Image (tube, rainbow, N blue to C red; front, side):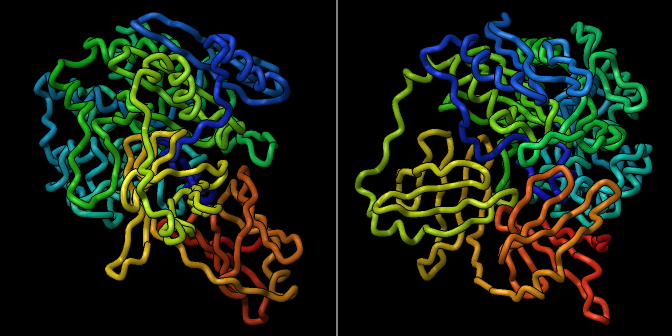
Length: 557
């Protein structure tokens, strides 16, 4: 998931929705094809961006289809031949290229970064394996507050690397985990340095051409391929053209475009042993071992290991403004499920990772039905439920835990409220999703945080504490207006009675809450904004703080 403010536009590359809850489940009495047509037909009811989906098993396509519009203005429908930008799905291609070069003896995963980029700060202690597993500690350039204002203009690889190479590291190599686009951008350039060919050419000659992937390549904004969809954003039920990234900023981290058919060919080859030797593939699909008490993902090399109703899953998603995608493989069932969409924020109910999980769940419901059901711990003392009530900082969202009689519920930002069930002391699970949460206590026994596990990802979410502050009409009116968050982004602040709302270009409107007369916070994410006055007391600037990054935004209206 991506956060609603600057980080959303800077996160290249949605991995997946780490708190996955089904939206419109396919009706059990319908066949897979009938269910898909009935559900996805909603995309063709009006002027909606679209989605292409594919389900396959044992090397055979069971269903594929397109819904909605590839280009709303031209009334061009999405088909299975429609091309989409696929964002971070690119990472597995980059990882496979590095592993192929290692098999050929042209590099080693233990090679230090400064072998390829001499003088890179800390490069002698950062290995290629650190880069592959997001454990290098290099700060991701997509998290830099200036990123949003730069991404619409082309950039040379050496200039992009120079822009982030001197940023302070997030942690020492191997001592933490942070999803990292800088690492995969560097890996893409290393493929070029070692092979003697730029990574787009290497991909074409070693992957795309041999596998017959005729509709896949590195996206060039100046020369888009024929049959390419247009990217949109959907917010508050309104559809608009999305911010158009120049994909020179994505490189080996996320610059590919493809179709559902080509990604099916790729998955069959990758899992069929046609891309890598057995040892390399095993390394690619083995989660990195993280230090004790370090949160992170079950991440291998460009791939994420998780489960669907306890069936093993290997997958990766992608997302950038206007585009979202998910490529899933259930290796034991030899099943591939793909969904590609030309909208981010997405059409409600059509977020690709939710769709692939939903389709796989329907297709494999017989196998899933044979698994023993999860059972709640009926001996749990429900008198302690009140300890857990509150809000928890999920970084890209907020989990609100509430109690109704003797039942406990969890609600993530933008999703429905669902009951959570006890499995052990201070530990709960969702029956409708493969997720669990353990509430953490201080030495005094007070609940101070929650540790959430789902989809191969585990993270710690601090409990939020907020105070209620009331402001005068004059104090509220002073901050209303528009603030320039970047060349293509404006934050609009409005009010409805005592409630204040903020909306960034292309994103939904969210209420913000006062911490003082000048400082407000979002409660859907951990973010705040401070409004600054000039010497005459007039508000002239907003300072946005999120994920440790600060953005200065002048008031323009």
